[in-house]
Amino acid sequence: MPGGGGYDSQSASAIAAADSAQTSSENAAAKFTKSQNYTGSRNLYDSPSAKHRAKLSLFSSEATVRDPYTGEILTLTKSEAKRLYGSDWQKHSAEADHIYPLERIHEAHKDNPFLTNDDIRNAANSPENIEVTSRAFNNAKRSRTNSEFMAERDYRDERGLRLSPEAERRASQRGKSAEDFVNRNLRWSSTARNITGTFHEAGTQGAYYAGGTALTMSGIMNITAVIKGEKSASEAISDTVKDGGKGAVTGYAVSGGLATLSQALSWSSSKFVQGLMKSNVPAQVVTAVMTLGGAVKRYAEGQTNTEEFMLEIGNKGAGLAGAGYGFAVGQSLIPIPVIGGAVGALAGNLMTGELYNTLIGKLQSGRLEREERERVIAECEEAVRQGKAFRAELEAYLREWFRDCRTCFDDALSQMRFALANDDADGIIAAANKITRKLGGQVKYENTREFRAFLSDGTVDEF
Image (cartoon, rainbow, N blue to C red; front, side):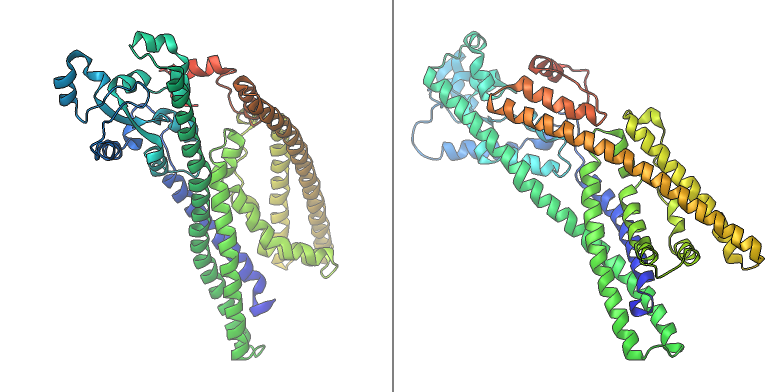
């Protein structure tokens, strides 16, 4: 045990890192919170100043400014358009707006767990997504994409917007280019930057707390070793510094990883996965593995006997069983049968853990007669055996579920790739719905017709 307490300082580092990760996860959740409703949230994403700059830039030269699709001459101000063109002023008054509509951008990225409102706002108001057209064109288009607007020729004719085939082609291409730019910016650049930032911020905080905790624990143990004459002062100082450094590294990796994983999974449509995140289960699992892993390895290698092994894990980690696994909320909240079984196996494991703790308490009292002590040790061994059986059952359930999930995901993604290659929107929706149903989510629409109806339904407030 390096540092006179390497195992204890490692355990303490893991616990400190897990606690720090919980705080970092809460901070990340607040940072990346976004409204699920576009109505009432437009001002979060619109930038009047960016649109005004686009107009001023276009009119900065002395060249005549025309609507890029209708060809009509444009004026900088509405009053000038009214003065020059009378009742036709809307065809000549310049307006700047978003090519890829704000509402569509919000719907496409509101569920990304690593995007902020500012990220969406910046991408939406980039020069690549702002275009100056006539007020008549902009008002008629509203929240349609350019491709959708070009496809509604009868509607455009009713609004007095008759475009040439070449103008329709340019508008569709311009819309596709803007949409690709915004989506690429948000899904890759901004998301990658925020994932890295979240990991580093949480990891740095975890390193601070875990390193400090390990330093304290190791320092106490090494001071004791010096007093007992087991180490020299220089050896104690060296070991303490090493333990502190290991704790900091552990804290950075554990806290950064847990906070990032928690933020990613907290947006899952599965209530089971959400329950795991809210109960801090990943942190508890990591803590348990780091705390008990050494004891299990020593027992497996024959370095300790059964009694020593049980006493060691009783001292160092048995309390973890009840520390943070209260996520078993019942089959009613877990629509996946195999997961309900897994939760049952987990509950059985925890109950044997409680029995084990009681027996360990008797062993540690030191006041048992030999026969009673042997009986208690036998009961402990039986509790361990039952615990292993429940754990094996839990692992079998989870393997079954994840194998089934993998098959479902492979099928759905293959179907999605084929649908994308063939511009089959209904096929993409069907593939996505497979995954949604598998994770216990609620499907809101089955095809593009139902999707459009869903978007226009004012009574719907979330996906």
